[in-house]
Image (cartoon, rainbow, N blue to C red; front, side):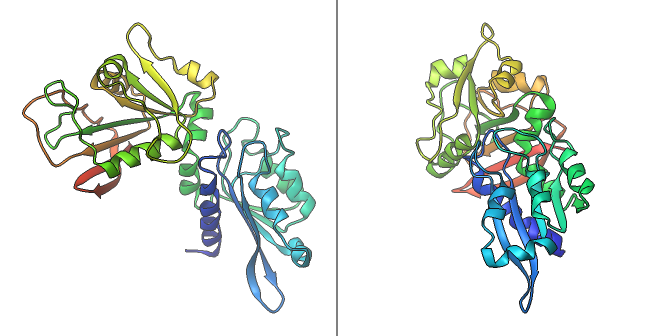
Amino acid sequence: MTTDERYMERCLQLARNGLLTARPNPMVGAVIVANCPGEGERIIGEGYHVRCGEGHAEVNAFASVKTADKPLLREATLYVSLEPCSHFGKTPPCADLIVEKGVRRVVVGCIDEFAKVQGRGIRRLQEAGISVTVGVKETECRQLNRRFFTFHRLHRPYIILKWAQTANGFIDDRGHALAISTPFTQMLVHKLRAEEDAVLVGRITDEREHPRLTVRHWVGPDPVRLVVSRSQPLHLDDLYEKGIQSLIVEGGATTLNRFLEQDLWDEIRVETAPFTVTDGTRAPQLPATARVARSENYDGNTIVTLVRA
């Protein structure tokens, strides 16, 4: 791992602290590194974007620099996981602040796809004579804000299809609801709900199981609860207009298959229990374009996360 990659990894660690609070803004971390006389290279400031409407990561990083270290800024390097903003929103442009602070170099994880940024922040820094490096740990930086990027690029939420199935591929027992998740994996489902904006089920699942779709076994905000049917279909444009950046589709099979048939998915999470049933509703078939990104085992159940190949 290079020096730049090591400090960018620290940016990512900081950024993740904003998972539940930064929305609808992206998660961003920033680190300021300087060569200190008699000490060598060390971090003199760091911060992350805590909450929408409050200071961005760069602002918080500069604010954390001790008075004795401020003269070091002129020869310092700022690492930031996402391109600094260049527009006035709820806060002033971070690119202008960086220029004002006079750092020597800026290392950026990835370009911001938000229409008001998209390279403008980097150009502002370069025009001020600051050396800029872009694309350090870019894949990880983009993955961190995949919801934000999908929302602004495709004008729809980041869509996660999720279901639980038996070892022989059924999601219920002859049409009757079946407890497949363990208490621990159920807690993980509630953790996932706390991290996403909305959760959706079909009418049949809603009428048969009356799911609450809350985060009662975790800590965080409940997602927006959505129920769809043929008479009340889902319009992704409506979700975009409401600012919903991520959506979990929890089923049942008809609803899940409808999303798969329209190729409306970004991530699929399948929990498989070790037991079987003789008959029931078949779990959806995984698309050919899905590849396994992660596989984990909890209490005998396996949770596989798939993304597009």
